[in-house]
Image (cartoon, rainbow, N blue to C red):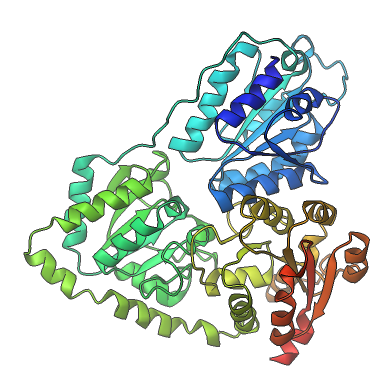
Length: 540
């Protein structure tokens, strides 16, 4: 067994079942191993697409996928996708080639040579490792999967020199260890439970770290009778239309007032970062009460907001531990505080003040999300950086976690929506998948329509066509800047759909969109739905 073959065997042992990649002369040894393995292989049209597909796969399933990428240009191409995954704590294993060990660092002009490739990629990964010694492979993979299972996840990059890939390996390899995440300290749980039990205006902030334990999140929030904000990546953790769930609205004035008035705030698995808590970018978010922070990353416990109690723990364990502690509280003054909290009433008051359905900027998108919900209630909706998705971060309510994610957070890259949706469809073939994209962002990744056709899964690609980069156009108008570089002529999407053997429908209003979405399962092929944004607005 060669090093490349042992790598693939170990990936299977760790439960990896899918690899995204584009074969190259520097990775053919990996493909020799893949050919006799149980891993599915999906070929995107660009390495950035491979990374976004692995990202969407992990977000939809909770499991990492592998990317097999050539050295040099392959790695610079996937770097953007790795940056998005790192920003949003998405696990991804990137395996790349690199030139032979004897040539590394010598600048000999070899094929795909990039000085310090590993160092370049270390900025968009949890760690980047060069496998100089083939027998170290099991150890390095164990490090990667320990990160995925017990730390703040993100991309891990392992580069393998060409001569190492083909090296014969010793007989046998160690079995993967059972790795468990950090558990909360009992004294931290006891103190946090005491503060929460005696709070009069508690508040819960649910981040992406909670998506693996929705039942625990719902039980704890209900036990506390506390309003809760979910980050964009935690949407659906409390289920659809939960009376205590205020969604990802914490950047808005009425929601900020509630946050500032809370006397105890419990923040679970959230970095409390700008792209969730200050989407209006004015620096106006603040917490004045006691802050209890729970995070799997010790460094994150001290970032953005200073905590009064910081607990290093996996969020699910912490939530179950706090629920248990609170359930054991004696019937004393703390119960009197709890009975007067009126969490649902406080949440309703904020909803009334927000009046999202009446907001002038959100109004065109309210019927869009009502239509998506009516036509495809169980769908995974994957968004790009585009106006409807920004609005949906406020408006959409999902029935479960891992059903809503997009590139509007963290790295904020364009071109994410379509390939990430294909990754989600690969991970969850049992659910309909909608890619919600703009005409500008889709043009970053038009080639992935070919991948969509190859997959043969019923993915709806909903294109919000507003003739260019409308979000930037609006910012330019607000800042009295001429519209330069934002008024783009869209391609003929009907002709593109025909060229890629995809189905195509054009819609202008909610009723025609509902009818179009109803045809998603007519055939196992992508359905491109082009929404004329101007006609849509005129129809309302």
